[in-house]
Image 1: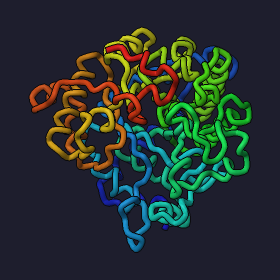
Image 2 (image 1 turned 60 degrees about the vertical axis):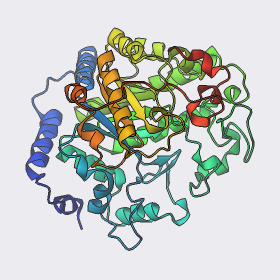
Image 3 (image 1 turned 135 degrees about the horizontal axis):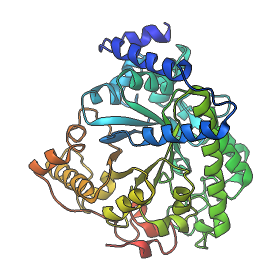
Length: 437
């Protein structure tokens, strides 16, 4: 079946939207645009102007779809785009979700087709088998998601986990062959227990030029081959990038410069893509919400903002270090929209099971979202909430509605010492020193 026929088979009344969307893109690329070939400075100014306008679009909710769309589907189920989208996506139409940040796997092991990265296998895990079925039909997860999003007026970013460590402990996450072939590129050796809690051995070491080159090529490969609206650099999944951090030693200014230079290369690449296709390619970054904590792990956020290296800033995750007002003020100062990341692991009080359907948990999500809106953020970003029919997707994007709903008006910051992901001290020595309540 051709991809065009596959998408039409969804039967969701997308034809007119698809046609108008395609027409818009054609006019952007081939329309009556000024010929700036003799005036490269003017052309670059126009690219930046258009990019900044695109960055300011309304995003009531950004939904991070973790990419395991087939997780609960039996082996005998149809391996089709419709089935994939039915798991986490179709039900979002008509909700407050305006953007989908779509992750296709862990470092260099993805469900989208590529000659640069590897096709995820997961040793027979059900969802991986179905993703392979899509490829045999001539499409893949990222292509299906991007086409669906654009047919429905949804923005779609490809989300790259900048350093995922699941393959250190979970056998069903098959570590990328690239890691196995180059163990010298990792922060530790297989099975090693590193001194700073969650700094697991399988994460790549950004202090090495070949690692940074690999990351750049992965991002470039997606940006040049898929019609995504932008790239998300997810630095919170997981926040370890340089070897000294894993043994409790300081990350230096030189390390920060290495990461900044990588961001600069990515920006240069995305601007070239934007010029070629006639519309912007945005860069979003998800990071801890503390400038100081970020610098302690090698991420010079202020420099990135000053040098116009990111378009969207998403703050927080397993832990939160400062009031939402601080993040909102930072975005306002540099003209970058800011989104508050809400995660059950942090929001739900200690001692209560992470059962996200409980009324108490829902009230906490509402309260946290309203606090963030009141602080001046541009929208809400959800992580690890996957049911498209979940109430939160029809509530969290409207602060006026939230004011009328039952809620618990509190903000949960961090977990207790030694509580793994939720303890900032587990990620970097002295991490709890950055808490500003």
